[in-house]
Length: 194
Ligand code: S3P
Image (cartoon, protein in one colour):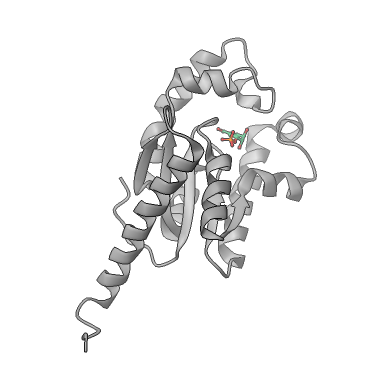
């Protein structure tokens, strides 16, 4: 679990494909009035191509290059706090994990392999799941990546039985507590209350 304190007020969503990052990020941004940065959308704009086309032309390696670049660009150019939706594999690179940890409050959206398969198992937009046995791939990738999601996350939500709105409200509550604690830690011993 990420126990680091953060001074930037972004809310970042990580988690496996189909865990609801984009829909929940939209809802959090709507409720808080924060701008949304959806990294998969930004990758498509930067490349001028769909994600399956990026994978078919340059493989996963090219996609990961775009992904790391877009994350850095968002971090370097942001002015106001953002809600950031990431792609499921963003945590694979250590440099991305370090950057995510420094960027704000990170929530890990979790879903079971069965639920994930129902949501995205037969969806051709996810090149990594296009093999013969997507259910096994989902299980394997979830097992490999879970420790990485856990490493960056301040907060985890099991999404199986919750609505997008319920998940968004839980994140907003936890983020407020997190940011308030950080402000208090920053002020501790420095700002006398008068
Ligand atoms: C990927 C997840 C996808 C997309 C790409 C790779 C992954 O995003 O970034 O297909 O490695 O898990 P979603 O998590 O939004 O589906």
